[in-house]
Amino acid sequence: MAAEKIPVVASFSILGDIVNTVGGDRVAVSTLVGPDQDAHVFEPTPADVEAIAKARLVVINGLGFEGWMARLTDAADYRGSIVVASDGVLARQRPGKGARPDPHAWQDPVNVMIYTRNIVAALSKLDPASSAAYKANGERYLRALADLDRWAQAQFSAIPALRRTVITSHDAFEYFGAHYGVVFLAAQGVSTDSEPSAHDIALLIRQIKQQHVKAVFFENMSNPRLLQQLSRDAGVAPGGKLYADALSAPGGPAPTYLHMMRYNIAQILVALSSFR
Image (cartoon, rainbow, N blue to C red):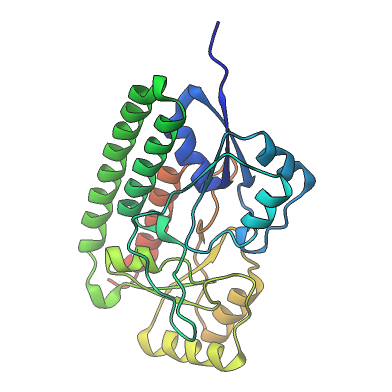
C-alpha cells in the first residue's frame, strides 16, 4: 500500500510549485494564495484555517511577505513546523522610511536555489525515510535553475546595459534587476495595496520620455488601469503581461516557476530588443 502523503501548506502559488517539485509524490501540497491571486491583499477564509490545522508543514516566503500568516496559524492553533524558504537569502532593502526587506527574492533564480535547499532540509527532517528522494528531486531542480540562469545571463548580455530599462505596475523585480542588470521602474511600491501620488506618476512619465523607454508591462495580479493611464500619458504602448507574485493557471503560459521565469524573460527581451 502506498504511503500516505504528507499534507503541506505553501503560502502562495510560486512557493507551492517549488514544494511540489521537491516533495514529488510524497507530499500533498495546498496553496493559500493561488494562481493569478495577489498575496499583498489576501484575506484568509475558514477553509484556509482548516488547511493549516491539518498540515504537518507550512512553508512561507518570509521577509514580511505574508503579514497575515501569524493570525492564520493562531486561528488554526497550528503546532507543526514552519519553514521560511528565504532563510539565508541576502535581502534587498526597500527605499524610503523605515527600511524593510523586499520580499520578492524568488525573482532571482539563485535565491530559489536557497529556497530549494531549505525545503529539502525541512521535508527530510519531517520524513527521514524519504530524505534521499527529496535530495534527488532537489538536486535535479537545482540543475534546472542553473540552466535557466545561464540562459538568461546570455540573453541579457546581448543587450547594451544602457538600454535595459523596464516599467512595471508594481515594484516586484528588484532582485531580478540586480541579478541581470536590468533597471525596473514601478508605478506602485513594493505592495500592490499602495497607490502612487500624482507627483510620482509625473516623475515616472518624464523619465520614460527622457530615456525613450519602450518596455512597459502589466502584471497578472495587478489592476491594469494605472499602467494604461501611464502608457497613454507617456505615449508608450504597453507590452505583454509579466508574472510577478503568482503563477498562471495550469493552462496558461506560467504554470510553474521555471515556465514563469522563461516567459517573463522572453517578454522583456522582445521589448528591450526594440531599442536596437
